[in-house]
Image 1 (cartoon, rainbow, N blue to C red):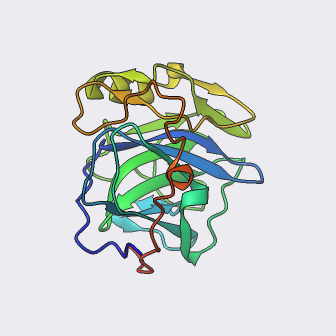
Image 2 (tube, one colour):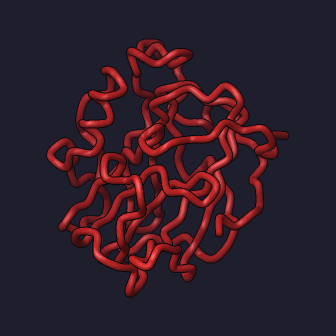
Length: 212
C-alpha cells in the first residue's frame, strides 16, 4: 500500500478543481495537469484561509494518496479518506482547497469572492493561487466545468479557471482530460481510460497527518 513516502511535490496549478457538488451527497472532481510518476500525497479541505496567513481549523480534511499519476487523470471523493473534522460542503457558500505539505495548490469558492475566513462559508485567497483558483457568486447545488477537455497545459488551466466555462449541473463529470504537452499523460481517446483514480485501482492508503 502507498503511504505517501517519496511522493512528488505538486505545485500551484499542477492540479485544478473541475467540479463540486454541495448538496448531499457531496462530491469533488480534481484533474491533474501534470504527471507524477512517484505519486502524490495531498489533502483536500473545506477549511478557509485566514487573511492573517493560516488555516481556519474548524471544518474537514481528506487525504488523497496515489502511487502514480498521469496527466489528465481525475480523482473524486471516492478516492479520498478522512483525516480530521467533518468535510461537509455547504450549498449556501463554501470553499475547497487542494493542499500539498500545507501549501494550497488549487482552490474554488462559491457565494462571493475571496475575503477572509470569518466563518465556515468565507475564505481569503492563499498565496500563489491567483492563477489556480476560481470563484462563483451563485451557490447552486453543483458547479461543473463544461469547457475543453483536450489542450495544452496552459489552455486547460486557463479554461478551468474561467467561470464562463462552468455551468450549474446535477451530476459531476469525472472523465479524463488530454494534456497534449504533458509527458506520461492519458491519451484522451481510449474508452478504457480511467475516469478517476478509484476506477483505475490506484488509490493508496491515506497518510493520516493533518496539514497544519
